[in-house]
Amino acid sequence: MSMSNLVLKGSLTMLALRFVMRGSGLFSMLVLARLLTPEDFGVVAIVSLVIFLFDIISETGTQEYLIQKENVTTEDLNSAWTLNLILKSVVFVVFLFSVDLISRYFGDPSLKNPLYVISVLLLVNGFFNPAIALYAKDLDYSPMFKMAVIEKMLSISVVIPLAFVLRNYWAMIVGLALSYSLKTILSFVYHNFRPRIGFQRIREQWDFSKWIVAKGFLGYFRAQFDTLLVSKNFGTIELGGYNMMKNLSALPAYDIVAPATSPLLSSFSRNKNDLGTLTNHLHISLFIICLLIVPVAAFMIMQHELITLVILGEQWVDYSGLLSIMSVLLFTFSFSSIFQHFFRALG
Image (cartoon, rainbow, N blue to C red; front, side, top):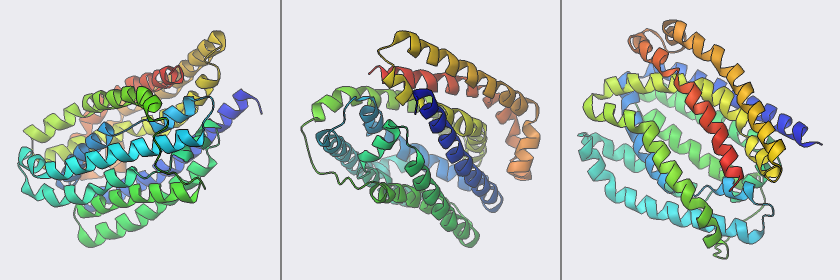
C-alpha cells in the first residue's frame, strides 16, 4: 500500500476513533452537566489542573521517540519503559508530599482526598506498554481504536451511574482514575511485548525526551495559566463555568484536528530526507485544516448560546459568551499541532 493510502487510512481510522470517543464523551458531559453543578466541575478542574501538570513534567515522549526512529529494538523499548517508569515514580512521590501544600494554596482543605485518589494516575501511567507505539509507527491504528473504545465505554458505564447515586464530583474523580488505569491494562492486552528494566538506550532517549519534557511543561503552563488564574482569584463555581466553556470550545480541535493530523508524524518521518515531498505534505495539511476549522469557528461565534443550551442546559448559558471568544483558539491549536509533528519528525 502506498504512503498516501496509509496516511489516508490512518487519518480515517483516527477520525472514526475520535467520532466514537467524542460522541461518548459528549454524551457523558451532557448527562453530568445536568446531574452535577458548576461547583463540582470547578473542583474537578483544580484536581485535573494539578495532576496533569505533574504528569506532563514526567512525560518522556516515548511514542514520539519510537515513531521517529528508523529501527526500533528491544533495547529501545525496554529503555523507554524504564525511563518512563523512573520519572513517573519520582514525580508520584513528590506529588504525595505536595498535596497539603497544594490544598493550602487553593485555600480548600477538602481537595486533599481527591488529590490523593487521583495521584494513582502518575504511577499507573509509568507502567504503560511502550510497544503500542509500534502500531502508530506502522500506521496501524486499529488496536488503539479498540483500546480507546473499550476504555471509554467501561469508564462511562461507571461514571454516569455513580453521578446518579453520589450527585457530586467524586463520580468524575473515580471515572478519571479508572480511565487511565484501563489504558495501561489494555496496553498489555493488545501487545504481547513485556518490557523489562533496561538502561542501554536511556541516554539516547533522554537526548530526545528532554525537549519533550521542556515543551510539555511550557506548553501546559501556557495552556492552563488562565485556569490557574481563575482558580486562584474566583470561586469554584466560576471556575467550573469557565472550564466547561473552555472544554466545549476545544471539542472541534480534538474531534477534527487531532485525529486528522495524528498520522502526520509517521508520514513526515518517512519523508524527512526528501525536502520537496516533505514540504508538499506540510502545505497540503495546512490547507485542509483551514478548510475544516474556518466554518466551525464561525458557527461557534454566531451560535454560542444555542450550542451551550443544547449541549449543557440552561444553568450554563450565562457562561456561553466565553465560548464565542475561545473559538479563536481553534486556529492556534490546529497550526501548532501540524508544526509539532513536522519538527518531531526531524528529531
